[in-house]
Amino acid sequence: MKVLVVAAHPDDEVLGCGGTAARLVAEGNDVHFAILGEGLTSRQADRGSTDANHLATLHRQAHAAASKLGVKDLSLHKLPDNRLDTLPLLDLVKIVEELIERVEPDILYTHHGGDLNIDHGIIHRAVLTATRPTPGQPVKEIYAFEVPSSTEWAFQRLESPFRPNVFIDVARTLDAKIAAMECYESEARNFPHPRSPEGLRAIAMRWGSVAGCRAAEAFELVRSIRL
Image (cartoon, rainbow, N blue to C red; front, side, top):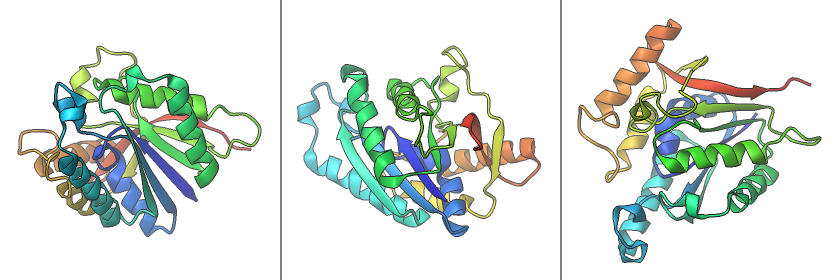
């Protein structure tokens, strides 16, 4: 199978489905990562004041994380961080459509629409628009993932709450996910932050206990079409 992961920021792809991506690769599938936002400039009042070297370092870390997971390729689109609401939705849809045309994925993973981070919700909508089930649409399954420190921090007050109904056993690939996250030196945090190694293990163990395995990643099935 061909699998496409569409994420808003560098590290979202690892946090959301890093263990699943590593498992899919180990099982012989082609996994492609696409990150639409550049991931850094919102930390400055003026986007233009961000150090270009820091941004380049973050993007090198994204490539290193992808390598840890064994994904086939990574594309970085470098749109303004946490400012995707300032762009026409159509521009984002066109990017996702071009990715789908190039990759021809059977399965697509992306953000949950009710996350606290505004870019996550916008990416979710752009993906749904770009994957309308018209004749010739290659994407047959769409899954929404959670991003620790965004999905749960909405506290189920944004529509719609994350309601996972698909769980993937990642006991054998959880270490690869954590190793990939460690590539993001500027994005990882110390415990008890959800993006800490301990936090990621706790989340995986929690979902594993729900699904009857040692560790799992949780997803909400958006659509599945069998022809």
